[in-house]
Each structure stands twice: as structure tokens, then as C-alpha cells.
Figure 1 (cartoon, one colour):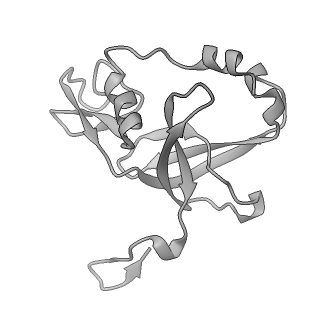
Figure 2: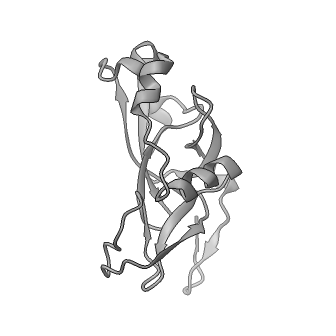
Length: 155
């Protein structure tokens, strides 16, 4: 990886997004949450997309979600990742609602990936040493079954 080129792609840590990055350093996924309607949002922003309130707080969330979509990058689009080709880009739907674009830690072969596979956030340093969030596929056996009102068990 071209670390210098990669570092230029990273967002600046600002007063507005520092709680997210502090959460990554603590091994927690933190999302901006509207104090009026409890809508979680990512990325952070000045107003709630649901009720337009400007009032918010930061909350630690579950870090769980599902694999909503993915693709494998075969083109040298970003010079920072030229020697990583091919690499997988994952589109994650968090359990709390927002979507995140990320990558998967030790992804299985593509034929083994499926829509709605459960994922869990994992944290670690990137090539520059900054703690970042990535995701890992959870086995269906590790997901707690949920009983519906009708008594059926769903995973």
C-alpha cells in the first residue's frame, strides 16, 4: 500500500467528528444520534435527516449489521490501493439503520458471500496507525435467535 497516498484519502479529524474517531480508538462504534427523534446517522451532519433538528448527541451502538452489498475492485482507481487489487468493498447496513461503506476482515471467497449475512464491527489501526472500523462476517450460529410474537424462531 502506498501509505502517503492513503493518508491523503483519510478525512480530517475535526471537532464535529472527533467522537466517532475516539470511539474507534476505544473499540466502539459511535454514531451521531438526534436527541429529538432518536435517529442515528452516519456520516455525522449538522441536522437530523428525519426531523431537521440540530440537536444531537453521540451514542455507542451495537456495531452489528448485515452485508447489504459488495463489489470487488479490479481497477486501479485509487493509487493508494494499487498493490491491493483486487480488493473487496462492503456496503453495510447497521442494525441501527445507517449504512457504512467499509471493508471486510478476512473475507470469505466471493461465492460464500450472501446478502444479509450478519456482520460485526472490528477495530484496528490502518496503514497510518489510525484506528478504523472494519467488519467481519458473523457465522449464523453466533447470532442469537429471536422469537417472534407468533412463536417462530428467526435468526
